[in-house]
Amino acid sequence: MAMIAMMLELQRQLGVAMGAVFALALPASSDGCARLEHGGQGYVVCEVSAEEEPRLRLWQSDAEGRPLNNFNNIRKTLGGDETLGFAMNAGMFHPDYRPVGLLVIEGETLSDINLAAGSGNFGMLPNGVFCTGGDRPFQVIESRSFSQTRPQCRLATQSGPMLVIDGALHPRFLVDSDSRYIRNGVGVSPDGDTAWFAISDRPVTFHEFGRLFRDGLGVQNALYFDGSISRLYAPGVNRADFGRSLGPIIGLVDSNG
Image (cartoon, rainbow, N blue to C red; front, side, top):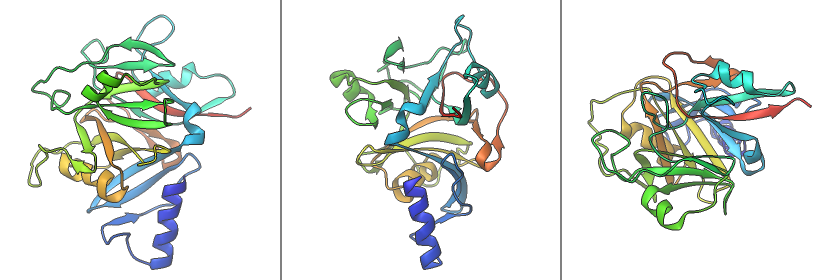
């Protein structure tokens, strides 16, 4: 919770929104999630530190190979001393819920990387990969670079488009776009020690969502997970979204033992 806590303290001391456009409406919950405002739009942002990386999990199917699809089914897979701190959808999927791109769970590649361009959001190149447990705790890597270097990842999920690429917004994002959806994604601190998982409260444009990561959180690289079907489970900020079934899901697990 270091970054969220720091921004809260700055806001308290200054009495103004950070950078005149970034405000935190509520303190971070015990699971690192907070309600934020940036550029007139509301978001929930959940922060995961390097020390917490081993508690981050990625789910797709149960032991029988059946898609888990929702947060309630995820909770049923947990051990008796475990609780779900937060979770959100984590990448695009086919009608049968198989991931469109790379999926690595606990070092096992369940779906290979997909470098094809296309008409949908996934094919709006460059897209990218969120990777944990490699050379750095967290990374967002452009897909073609990932394919060339093949870094080791404990968890990895591919989606697209990239929201922020080396400090710049994706070149196809338009300030005056009228395409608005509930959107979610992930960004990583420049040192790779912190990951921020964010979802909008209301429909936003790609440009607005990318600016949350670049200007509000100061990330150099961020990845879009999805839009319109985006869901969040975060009891610390009273969010338990429901709706269409999901493909890959990522979340933080707490142990009560």
